[in-house]
Length: 394
Ligand SMILES: *Cc1c(COP(=O)(O)O)cnc(C)c1O
Image (cartoon, rainbow, N blue to C red; front, side, top):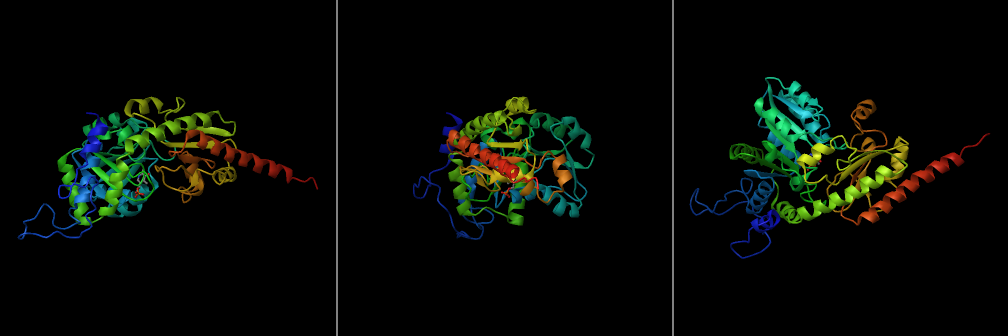
């Protein structure tokens, strides 16, 4: 049986009623026959049948022992950090998701946890950053927004040899393309808000652990701290995951066509997409992933915020918004949006140029998306022409 067939049929039919869709058990508590005698559920923060189906489904997708669902991706990350204690250290990817950076540095640092950021595409740099206090290695691959690729299996070996928990934020790749637990990671986390949900209609996070023991620890924090996913959002997420394989396949095909189009465009300077042979991480991406994903970044030859803003406001189908992974194409200008609070010099040093534009390629027809981008490039040319004709000698 293929994994897709297996996945679809692992979503159980409701035993009570035969409902083929997973029922939304919208209840806070469960009636007990006698104290402690129940049908496996007592209070809905601890366990809910709808959420349980989702958690098993994601664990299966990632080939893990246990899945634990949270009310956001950041709540999922937060639960993992609670495995640590005062004085522990984290080695993390330098191109880390901004919200994770804020959580590490503005929340956990004051509880005595230190984070060292390194270029994880260099395994030696990861090794060098490990100290006797390092307990956790934190990776994203590909990263946001410059799509840097790191070798999961190689970092897993370093983590294991040095007794560190190795966690991979697999949001960008999705388990359809990459299963880090199979490459030696201990924990995978998803912002399920993105590809797992896939329809830009919910906020959710999921942790999947390699072992049942680690899973029980995370489960403890889910219940003890309480950032659970609601039954309705669990239902939506199950529904999203049912078409994950199809969607991701199409996101990849569309993105590849668009990246190749951008690479040839005269107004484009650099294109960051691991599916291009020009990408420095292409070979590793090919080795560890079944595809290159739906996110592309690129810079303009006219490397100014003005040119980028003309572009991002010049499309019809690509909507200007943060977030990614949904059926509708989105674009954003990190220097003016997600990375606005980072000082210019630091931002540029991290590879986020003034004109860098990030695309989340959706499921529209690729040729329509390409003609949409063409439209935006014409807008830049018009702006340029207008600024030249405004010039007066005296
Ligand atoms: C969006 C995102 C998160 C945070 O998830 P939320 O669901 O927004 O809390 C974490 N990691 C990555 C890579 C993301 O893109």
